[in-house]
Amino acid sequence: MKNQALFVAVLAAATLAVGCKPSDETSTSQQLDKVQAETKQAARDLKEYTYAEKAEFVKSMQTQLAAMDQEMDELTVKIDKASDALKAEAKPKLQALRDQSTVLKQQLADAQNATESTWDSIKAGASSAYASAAKGVLEARQWVSDKIAP
Image (tube, rainbow, N blue to C red; front, top):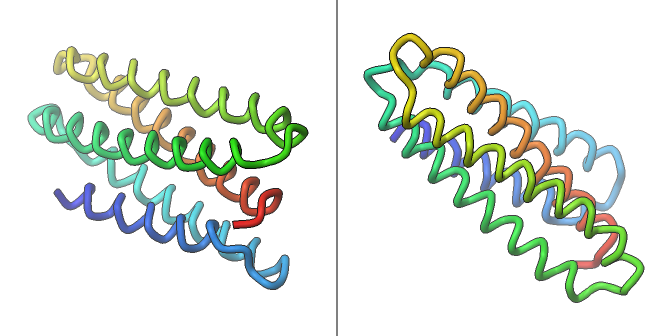
């Protein structure tokens, strides 16, 4: 539960920080740095789960993955309203995000089937996949904010 609340807070901060187009470039950079730091902290918090807490870890990660998928869907809607040139530029970026989501889903499946002896390496892989996917979503949000008016 602690990590779900943390993720929701990080996602909300990311949405607010990166979703709005600030008036100057410095504040955008500062906001992105802050969100990235919060994402790294959330990933570090995920590493604290023990094998006995495997089910809680998987549930937490699934909740976070669902939030990321929803964020990607929202970005897709915004991009679909953009010009053909921007759509063409965004298509590979969105596909990369979907690929990262697929990797994270596989990591979660592996985590569900992990044994006590494989738990630490699988948990680390899932945490890494989450951090990568979260960073990709933040970067995509920033790109959409920069390229497409809200």
